Length: 366
Image (tube, rainbow, N blue to C red; front, side, top):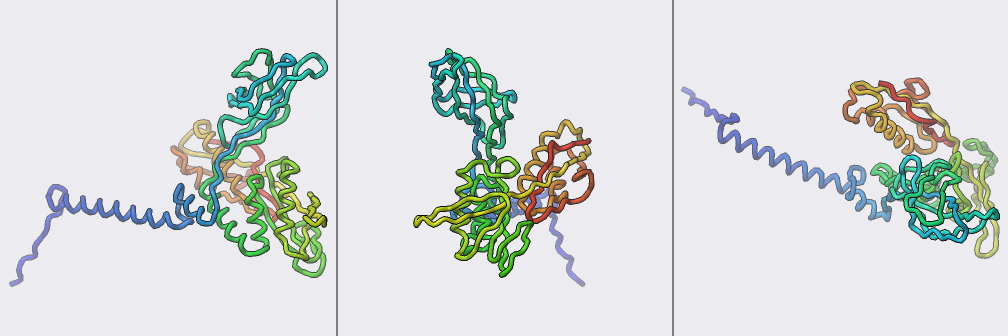
């Protein structure tokens, strides 16, 4: 006769059941911590300070947020000096602080005028349209009014983990000589270049490469900067790019481009003309349909998500709906999402020398 099998009761109301549950919970926590430590060693999965440390090993440092800058026009009594550090405010209630003292000098009409640089008090992606900075927060006797004749240069958000990983990958390619990937990686090291793409014509005859008539053994460079229509903002930036391209290319390789020329003078007095083109922006109208919430309640979060997505696209990248749908669906309260590009449920493919860009404010329906 078989002996009866012993049954161990591990129910919730038993001592053995409670001990087993507690041990299982502790072992699960230990496993999760171990997995997190393992992930922190891999740049592909590390985040935050752990990703910063991984990237620092290859001398790639996360770019921090930068304030917006603007040139202010101060008016008042001639002879008055407005000290540095004075605060003004725009119509969006963003505050700006002057960077140096500004003596008001007579403009010929008896009125004192001065131009002075100012920075936003808050760092990050913000700006100000012309004529919107008009309120004096810290008045000075004899200083009567302020305005900004030109739009502010927008600030820069802190580099995200995804952007840092991408820049690290490009930086590793820089050690590879003067290939297209290397030149592109070097260009993206400049904070004022949003995106770039490099092509080459390695043949012995002139060819059309990415819309540019490229001579034999030449490189075709496309840049998208932070100026108007993707151009660079000033001659200093232009000179830096020209020098980089000159030193990045090997002997016998020329540059080709349609939009910009700059003469680089070497230490021995030799002069070389460097050329490049500015990437063409392809504007995309974005419509987002949400379920579970009203459009007004999530408008700011949706708009921010769409803006960040398009900022992450590089020259030649296809604008895809799925990544955007996934990010918007993470917003609290949203139960369903549909994204349309130019009114259609289709991705927007661009040429290798074009950049997909949002054409205006996102249309949100819900």
